[in-house]
Amino acid sequence: MTGSEAPPATDSPATDAPEAPETDSYAVEKRIGRLAAVTLAWWAHGGVRLVLALVLMYYGGAKLVLGQFGLSGPGDALITQGEMSPMGLLWRMVAFSPLFQFLGGLAEFGAGLALLWRRTVPLGAAIGAASMSLVLVLNIGYDVMVKTPSLIYLILALIVLIPWMPRLARAFLGRGEIRRGPVPTLIPWRPADRVMTILGPLLAVVVAAVTLWAVAQMYPPRSTDESVPAGVWAVQEDTADPAAQLAEDTRWSAIAFGDTVSGGTSPVQLRRADGELVTGTYQRTGEGTVRLELHPLREEGQDIQEYLQQETRSLTLDLVEREDGTLHVTGEGQDLVLAPDESGSMLYERGFSWQIRPDDPFNR
Figure 1 (cartoon, rainbow, N blue to C red):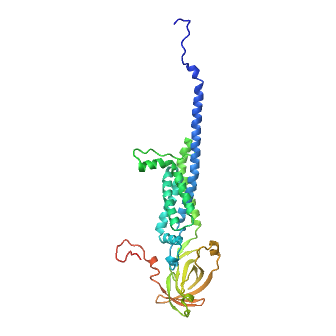
Figure 2: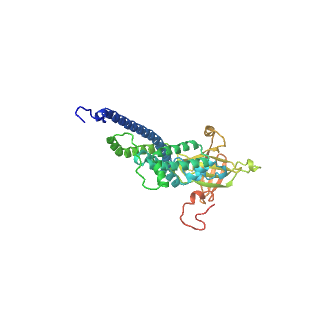
Figure 3: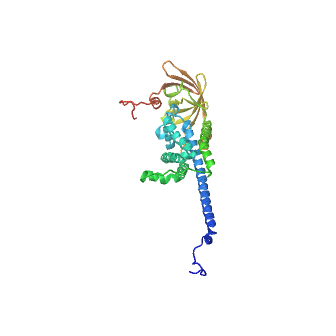
């Protein structure tokens, strides 16, 4: 090649140089777009888990303070299984065991608390999903009116769990190493991320404490008063004459006074000779005096407002405890002698035992 010959055509770096900034700019825009999409997704995810956390802490707190189902006692002793609604049967079953109610509330409240701290979100979502699955089954099996809400809460728990589902599937169905899961990041800025790592648990505890306090305020303070007339009583003597037909006999056959005082009143149930059961509350108004507010049981299909607004019958009774343990009741046309019903109060006096004996525990 002579000096006058042109050099062969080659790819000149200078020719492609202007395209590099364009390529870098595209990569940066793509990276920013992806970061924005991921951040928005975490914000949407955070909104769902916040709602779910508040719901779980509300229902869990109501169980922790033994408010949602209340406490079972002798004031509810006379209703028979056949008279209960399926929902009433569930409520009484849970109310009978404060331990069962408390542990159920602890699982729900703990799941809600875990959802508020990003490091424990998958744990909270998994426990929440398990709890809501059980609640949904109970609501369906016992015909509780909140079937749809419990299904929605279960779906919300599964939505929150989505980012960790591949790892859970690998843990249960696959093999090999399971890599570290994602951490919800609402602000993709490292200094803010470090601050939230510290403040997150503190804020979660504050929200949990405020929620538990607010739920506790919804239920009036309770106390226990096991003094007379608390317990189940059967009519031993009655000065009134029986009716010609049993179906028309309105004399009393048994009465059950509760031992849990809430808002100044305790539950009471009264069974008449004709088989009718009336329920309500009673209040100790003085030495040996009680005031009863009674109304019929809620009928199937009866509107709740109509039931709550129905007229109640008020009775003021004088009680005198005798040396033999019986109770003399007078007032409002009644002149009765009541005797403790040992069989009727067995459920509340039997207690708990680890022992295996012919009669303890036993199935009846």
